[in-house]
Image (cartoon, rainbow, N blue to C red; front, side, top):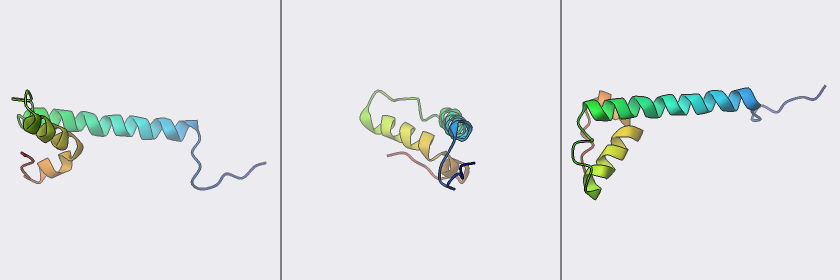
Length: 68
């Protein structure tokens, strides 16, 4: 019986990380949309603000303004 090293992931663990990452991004998209970060994404600064809001969405819950 082979021992598994603590840092090795099997297929099931990788799937859970992927689903967790997708869920994290989905929550970010929902919160960014509810805070109107997708209103004017036709320019670079609003697009960067929207991307920051998606990735750093926990800061939105704390009331941080991520407008660039």
